[in-house]
Image 1: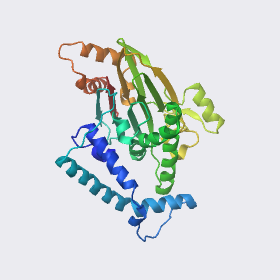
Image 2: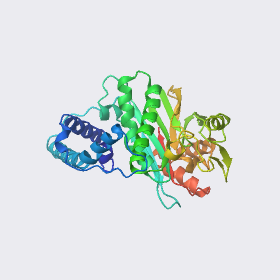
Image 3: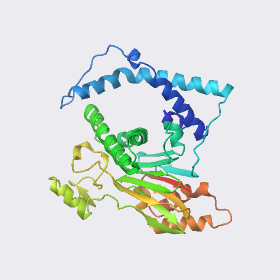
Image 4: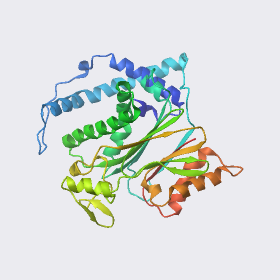
Length: 352
């Protein structure tokens, strides 16, 4: 729902509020009214089991009709609120956040990124401290996996937060469920793509991180880079041992690769390389004391050419200039990466 409203120029609090109200209205409807009589064709090499066929049936029969009704509901709220705007309540904690994403010299843009500062409003979380969510997804082999994570991961995480008190556990569960559900979709639709993922939850005094692959997040504190994670690369001794114990291999082919192909050892998707490419993320938790400068998330299109120290130095020097503006930082750092020779897709989120 929220994804449908992102292209609009409306303030995020308005987008999230409309999405919440429209979703609640849709959930109150008996969705069976949207079903049609349609035959289910299963031409895959591996026949679907009963649960998979049921999921396929719901998606095939309900999807288009539900989507049309959903858009009508959103339009009704937009018209109604344009005439009589209700009082909207923003989260008590909100960061100043900017982003930039470019295709660069690649034929396709396979990156996706998510920014939800009004997370509590979007998901109706009344008993949870105010939090913001940021995610960067670097797809490979197509856009199916990154697009799926972009739409679903933070929603799955919101549901996990409702049943778990521990945010790190909720992050792990959301990554694993996203990978599992995309795996079902991949089997049904013969998809082979995958995506790295790095996601953060930020509260007033905590930073929670979860990741798969080599997209990374760093923290700047006092003008110095704080490295928060160790990317999942096949050459990591623990990752290499895990892959080999499962019967896979790590070989050099221009870079260290899983079974000679993938240059990351954990990801959402990559159905052809499970279980060697794991969908279970690592996590970290960092205390925030108010002396932080910014948090930066980016894919390897940035990190392949700039170190965390270089990135923080570039941004700090720019902001110390008389005309240095925070909203220009993502574009600045993307331009620096291109100047340093990056040809890959680049996506950057910076939160102050």
